[in-house]
Each structure stands twice: as C-alpha cells, then as structure tokens.
Image (cartoon, rainbow over all chains, first blue to last red):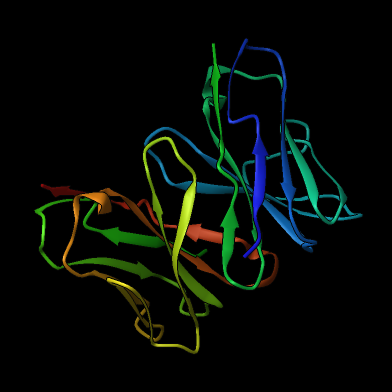
Length: 112
Length: 112
C-alpha cells in the first residue's frame, strides 16, 4: 500500500496565524483526502483534492479557512488560516490506493 | 447522509479473552468498509478492508464480518493481548470521491 509522509507532526501556533500541512505520497494517486479529528472525537472529512482542479469541500468547511493545493499526483497541502483555539485538532491526509485507505501520521495542532 | 455507530464506546477486559466490537451504518449502499486502530496521539493503522461483495476478512487474530443488507459489521479479536489496547475505528466508503465516514470508535483496554 501507499506510504504517506506528513509534516509537521505537531505545532503550537498563535491565534490569527496560519499553518500549512504537507503530505507526500510515494506513488501517484488521483484523489487525496483531508480529515480533522477534534479532541476526543472521530475523524471528519474536510475536503477531497484532485490534481488540476479545485478541492471539493464538505459541509461546514470553506476554502477561505482551509485552502488546499494539489500541484501534482503525489503531493498536497492543507492550510489552516486565521487560526483560533477551536482549530486545535489533529489533521490527517489520506489516499485510496485500492488496498483501502491509507493515512498519514497526522499533524497535532495546538492554537494558543 | 451516512451515519456510522460503534458499540460499545469503551471496553475493558482481561488478557486472553475473545471479544467483539460492533459497527452499524445507516446507508447500505457502501463500496467498502474498513477497520482501523488508533493509538493515543498517533495516526491510523488499517486492520482489515472488506469490499461490499465480501462477507468477511481475516488477518491473524482479527476477523471482520460484513452484513451489508442489515448495515452491520463486527470485528472479532481472538486471545486478546495488552498490545491490542487502542481505539478501534470503523469507517465506510461510498466509493469515488466520497472519502470515509467514521464511527466514534471503541476505546479498548486489555488488562494484563
């Protein structure tokens, strides 16, 4: 199955700033998925990113807050913009490589 | 909208016991179902993937079953070990760009 390198693994950020999370996959994939896991909760899909087109966002998530780039078939970034303490969560990227979904190791974000 | 429910939310058993984790989903039109484990502060590790046409999958001491028509899946863990302590997540996919819909998980503790 695919191997995903996600970074940073964790960060502590000031409110009002932005953080960009990167995911690199060791094979070409059509779609990449971004999830959020709030403290004590399960995972919620933020958006689906295809190469060469705008990401598709789930209800409750908007591009201005979570802009996504997908410049090629092995790489994607998620930016958390204008952060507030409510954005403190684990953010994970994922791909479907036909062996099921594989996840990056996650980015633990704390906003202070 | 797909909803996934996992029962029980938490479980604590002595080492060596066999146990069953339950997952139910509201929309039977799924593409596949996947079980993951998540260790504290870590990403997700895929355990078993069941395609919609399959009834069960086995890997070592783990066996997952799927009854698509009734919207249910079970994860059976044989001869539990302290290393099995983790949160177990059930997730279903509608295929394509749908990504995964997750349950809230079962927090499992195996007592030595």
